[in-house]
Length: 375
Image (tube, rainbow, N blue to C red; front, side):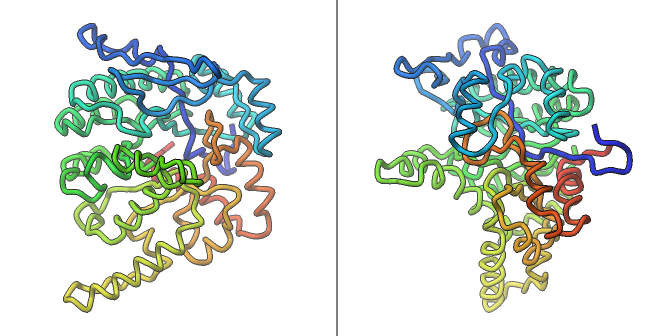
């Protein structure tokens, strides 16, 4: 743990990897909905969750520490985490590893809910309830160092609100809203009851890379798409931020805080310029012109974005200020965003290039504000 007076490092984008134990929290009557875990015969490290008769969501590869170390050498990024720590079988081990990495607190996001999880409201509600109860138990063991982002059943808004209240009482600091949720964008009035309750409960809205629109996912899985998951998951997150900037949600829910997670941050200047250009054009048609300077737009709308160590952070700060950026490790995953040593690398790479105040904002202050961590 960091000592008094020093920056308290908050990992704004860490993960928990679901296991079969995640579903032990289903009610007896809901056991029929229990997801099943299957392995690829050609590569047992690749496993898939099946809900009903469909493969759903994401299950990261089950790598041994030796395999994770080998992958780290191949990619040039440290992605090596103990299996029991990333699956939260051993919370104490996770805390010790955080100490080694110089991380005081982590905010845990799901792994599985990257896509639509169910076609039926009752199935979705049961799976969300089980996941949230599982995370509540993990939080109890976290010694005020592990917090989490709840998953909600958006096919049943009253049930989503009920689960929000449970989650808030058990360590959740945000709700997960995917950039596309079926046919709903994040600015759809369909969400307004959820946003109103999130404001009341002081829960942030975390838009982590994801896509719950099956048609969009299928389209972007074209065999001619050389970008892999970029168009499926990352691009919608960027689009969602632009959509939010162009909306009136900051007026309707002025206390609501928004986090855009794991899409890097290099796109921020582009999106801000596009938004300001369109705001100016809208004024020609009688819409009140937004006078907010471009570099203050994100702050004026309580928007925060997680950056990566390969982002041009000094340039982003020049264009958008340092009050919007956070840092995350993507702990527990092995994808291009994962960098377990992100904190150390961030300090080494940007020492002397950004101010101490900007570094403190990125390492602690902005994540603390977004997630409402008053410690």
